[in-house]
Length: 526
Image 1 (cartoon, helix red, strand yellow):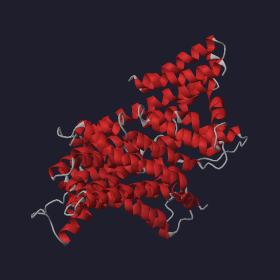
Image 2 (cartoon, rainbow, N blue to C red; image 1 turned 90 degrees about the vertical axis):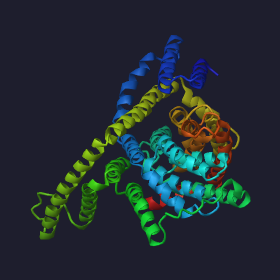
Image 3 (tube, helix red, strand yellow; image 1 turned 120 degrees about the horizontal axis):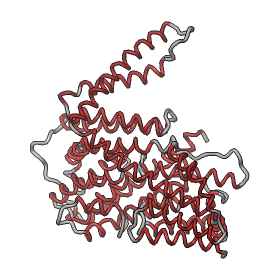
C-alpha cells in the first residue's frame, strides 16, 4: 500500500472515529477532508488545487432538481404530523381490531404503514406513534417490550416506504455512482437509475416486511395472549354503518393523498419533485379541514377544483392561444380558468387558516431545520468524496472488492455486513453520504448487479441501522417520548425480534431479487 492509499484509509478511519466521538457530521466530513487534502499536498501525493472542483459540485447539489423533493416531502410529513390525522386513524383502527387478541398491535402497524407513506420522515413518524400509541397499548395491558418494539419498528417503516427521504437521497447517490461506473467502462451515454425506480422497487419489499411484522404479532397473540390482551369494547363507540362511515372518514383523506403522490410517480405522470409539491399542497388542504372544520368549505373547494383540473387535462387540450382550438377545447379552457380561480381562493383560505393556528410557521421552521441539516451533511460529504478520490481511494476500493472471493456476491456481502456494523455507530444519512459513494461505483461495475436491487438491499440494511441497539436513532426518538415505566432496556429488548425480521428480509431479497425489480421493470415495460 502506497502513501496515497494509506492516507485514504486514514481519512476514513479519522472520520469514523470522530463521528463515534460525537462530533457534528457535516463539519467532521468537511474538516477532516480539508486536513487530509493539506497532508496530501504536503507529501506530494495530491494537489490542493483539486479542491477547486468543490464549488461546481456544491452548485450542482444545490441546483439538483431531484433533491428539491426533500424539503417538499419533509414539509408534507411535518404538516400532517401537526394535523393530528394520526390520532383519528389510530382511534378508528383500534376500535376496529382492538377486540381481537393482539388487535391493537395490528392496528398500530397498519396505521404506521399509512403514516410512513404519508410522512416519509422516520423521526416524525416515531414521535407521533410513540406519543399516541404507546400509552394506549400500556393502558390496555400490553407487555412493555412488545409495545415498545412494535412502535419503534412500525415508525421505522418510514425509512423504506415511499416516499421516504432516505430513498430520495439514496437514489441520487446511486444514480451518480451508476453513471460513474458506466463512464469508467467506456459508456459515454450512460443509463440512469432514478428516484422513481427506487420508489417502485421499494413498494413490494416494504409490503412484505409489513406482512412479516403482522405475522410475528399474530404469532405472539397465539403463543402469549397475556402479552397482548384484547381491548374491552367501548359502549359509546359507533357500531355498524356508523363505524364504517367513521372508518371511511378517517381513511379517505390520507389514502387519497398517498395514492395521488405515489400513483403519479409510479405511473410516470409526475417526477418525484412534482409529486412532492402536490403532496405538500394537499397536506395543507387536509390540515386546514382537520383543524378548522367550520371553515373547511374553502379547502374542500380547492380539492374539488384540483380534481376537476386533472380530469379536464385528460379530456381536452388546455393550451391557450391556439387558432385551431375546437369549440370543446375553448369551453374546457374557460372552465379551467374558473377552476383555477376556485383553487386559488381555496388555497389562500386554507393557508390563512393554518397560519392563524400557527401550524404553518411551526411546519416551515421544522422543515427548514431538517433540510438544512441534510444539505449541510451532503456538502461535507461532497468534499470528503472529492478528497478520497484525489488520494486514489476509489481505485483501492475497486481492487479490494474485485479481489474478494465469491466475485460480485462476495463483494456485496462484505459491503452489506460493513453497512450493518456501521449502523451501530452511524445513522443512515452518514452511511449514505460516506459509504455509498465509495463502494457503489466499483460494485456497479461488476457484471450482473441491478442498481435498483442493490439500492433496495442498502435501503433495508439502512432501515435496520435506524433500529438496532445501541445507537439506532429510532430508539432515541422513542426514549424521548415513552412513558417513565418503559425503560431503555425494554426498548432495546423489544426491538430485537423486529431487527431479526429485517435481517430475514435482507436474506429474502438476496435470494429473490425479483421482489425489488419486478415492479420497476413492469412500469418501464421491460
